[in-house]
Length: 124
Image (cartoon, rainbow, N blue to C red; front, side, top):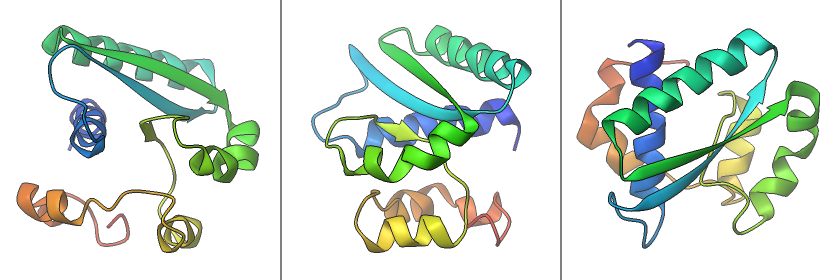
């Protein structure tokens, strides 16, 4: 799966998981960890492409420096309305966030979209 397709799916997952948010006339806050300017530019380009394909959806990109993001993600997840979609790594800390009900399950959407055939087992 290309970076562009993956980002677009992440944004659509965010829309699907937000109660009361519809596909029309919506805003989506998307927080991500940024390591450098090239990465920020790549995300911005993909968000702009997403918005061009989905003109009724405005994406507010919240790009945060890597160490600040890592240090604060747990407190942000505990805030009711900090962000609709947040980037994070797979692994133990993500599993802990899930065990604390700090993130929404995408199990049903995952099965429906058959993403097990797209993502590696470690990513799943």
